Length: 306
Image (tube, rainbow, N blue to C red):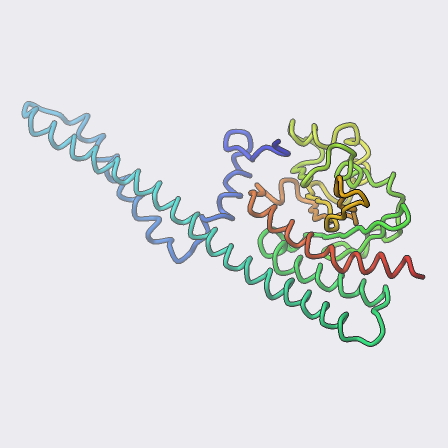
């Protein structure tokens, strides 16, 4: 099932070009190589016009010249296409390399240190310490991935569930002006959609809350007005996904369950601010969400013991 449609050239040309710029058109080191084919193509097109309107008695010679010029024009056009594809692939490869570094240095290493601290500390970490560790990891992920790729104004949140309440952990652009109070699960419409019985979603991504596309409308369904009201004045685009625990078998081993620990979300005030989230980007965020399930379980358990 598709959860959102892509930004298309003819529907949103400026946004489409902006998205393509972010994924390959901004390679300055290839600027000269990228400019050369259009120059050749322009010269060939001018030569074509001169040849077409300047044909005289020597038809055979002109036909040959015209044919050669058209070949030059087509060759230049193909080069433009190849250069564009190479630029975009090169940019994506470079971004993926940076993403691996981000995941390793800012998430996996932090989780390793957290696990070492939990294992060797004589007293168990209390809820405040665990919450600080989660905040630190969320902030590093937001600063080194979401902000670098999309916008410095990205806000991030983790909501963890305990005793029918969702507790927020916020970082990012406007964390000081957003609500920090725990809320009933019933009041969190995005979380309810992610955790809807029989229809659990991998993620929810809405590019423009004021004008969601048909897939986005299908996903958020009858909660659209409530989500829009909650977001008003804070954000216009967001992506959210569930944080679930590992599989737990019941006594009879006939089926397994994965307890829902909460959700993670990123949002921006700018409409279409995240552009086209490709599958590999969604999977990258999902990796972070899965990694965060471990300290979140510790946090929830520490709260239960109080």
